[in-house]
Length: 584
Image (cartoon, rainbow, N blue to C red; front, side):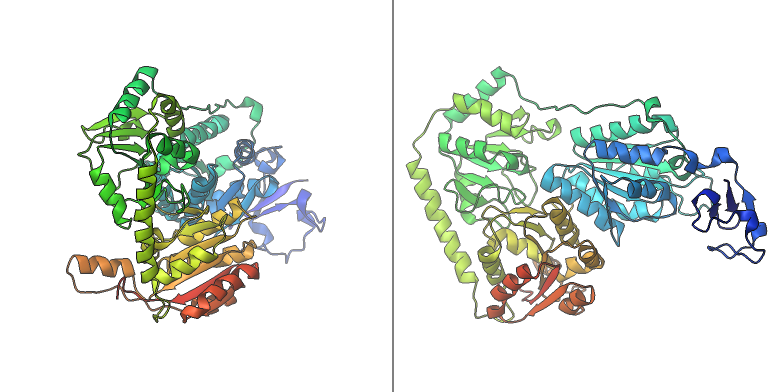
């Protein structure tokens, strides 16, 4: 059996893989190419040595199998001309799940969110040119938030041949600024080496690894036994005993220490709590570390920064020692740099943020564990009472703001209802904008997890983040809290949630404005301009897509709407008519 290739469109008539069993020469003269309509005379016999179908495994098969062997079993992307060999390898591999999105940006943001929630790597798979460029916003989110992601991109067959190349860009140059590892497979025998090296870099450097695979190389036969590979080892870092002892002496000498916990401390809540109790210090978090403790935790005071509790700013200002654990020092957190500080971070380049900082390079969990036996035990009653009193004052303010009589519905009331109704073990994906501001300030975490776009702060993160959350935690309730601006940027992929049967509740704070921009214009004393939004009926859109939609205009409807949405067991949009003004 042989194959015949159309010289017009490239369609392959493979005699060994045809259901009719008719050889090419036996086809009638009137037979036409099913793709482009060309006649039989446009076909040529293919040399058997060029048939990738005859290989037991192709480069693409080896790539996908190697990803799966390393635990990368989730692929987000879109198929296209320059990635068809890779897509076919995904189709044939039962251990890999392919989530086809409507826009590659959402694929990359979902992959970033997946790593932030699970610590596991997901893959983006797309084509050269526009597919690659579309991915970069989500990949920059991963870069800025130190999320490990691998991006596999098809590349055109002839490299950089000049003007006229279709979807041809220099992918190595394009991805260089966003990646911690960036390469193209030119030699098929280097396939596994480059892939395992990419995974190692993504893991250790906590960032984006990009690998491009030219279209012709994807389909080449490859024996995996011919390939070298590398392995990734666990690299946990702990300072020497002398450095730990010196840091403990500084803590013991302080009279009023404060712990500021960032994302780097998020997975070490028990150690942070033990540290707080040992030295009688409140725990204040960055926004991204919200949820490290439940709001009710006795040592948790609140968030530091633009939307945090005033008592947190006051306590930090009065402190004689700041103990920062995995803090990124965003301008929105506004950690004072003029005060004495013990600074713990896994990234040595972040250490020494100020001359007043005593740097401790390493993993927060290891360092806290090493410090605890060296610290003096302090009386906790006075500070516990003070923390409880300050939190009670702040909760009273938030309760007054949540006025159930106001119409349109006020955002503080929305957050109060969501705080009451969202289950304790739910996962929340948060978009960027006014919804984010109100969530950080007024939503009271219990034991939920939430994910957001931190340093890139890109609108449109909420929905792909929720898709990733449901794939990561299928047994948990998943919520997307978003605004009308952010949801509109990603709304095409609501059908993706429907297609893959990913029940979730999407709550849209619909204020018909780019509300955050309106506030920023006010702060800078510009007239409001260009922020008004003309929105579709989001609830009707949900129904058209195959999900369900609920319109909420009255405060009394909200609690019941959220409860109903959780019972729907399908993707559901709650379109909440709300107020664009923060305080009115």
